[in-house]
Length: 289
Figure 1 (cartoon, one colour):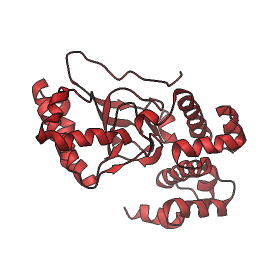
Figure 2: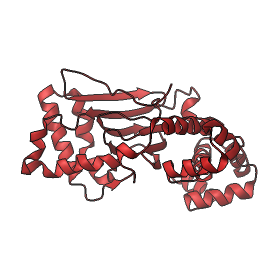
Figure 3: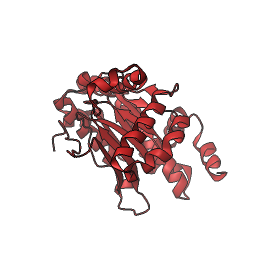
Figure 4: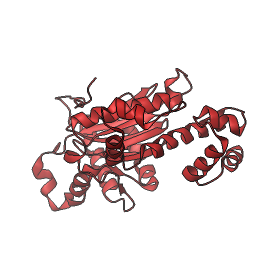
């Protein structure tokens, strides 16, 4: 499927689309739509793609994505292994920029929320403190009567607008972030890496998938992700290594090999670079939790 554009869920009788999504893994590719999207991750881990920003996501994170800003949440490999112990869950709210009418945002009292919605063009990551503050309201939103949903959601937006620690994610504006052809290329590359990272993955392989020369592919990947493909590949492998340490009683060398590293020394150096600690120290810290 060519991921040019995904129509966000539409309900003519409501201004807000609110869903508590519980699935084996998040299935949408790197995509965009006309709606704003507020996503609260309840369960699962993986990589988050917002415009040209890539980061790890975990339970408890809250993100606001603006209209036409390409995005996706790609679960960690273990979520694709048909294991019932791994479930992805998120509260997702889709809404139009002017869901209360354009004049509503022009009154002085709404200036901070209006600014928040404009900032969403870059994608916004909210602080843990603010997220915990509005978490209960967000979880209850779907259960409220229609009129109270609007009032409660405005309260949520107001709290988010006051978050002094919120961070913009993408340096590219939504309408310039990526075109359809490059979106399709990036999806194919990400999917290939996600399913083959434990094997050898080369620039030559990925450049052929993207129908680019090796040099052009390297420039393309870094331009749209702000990371080299090798950095991204190593982060995927190290995240998987962390999962193996938590779930399997195997030696450090086997963790490295199972994660795609064919050299133990390389695995240890890369782990330290990505996580800031040696793998053995990381594993000992897990045992004390």
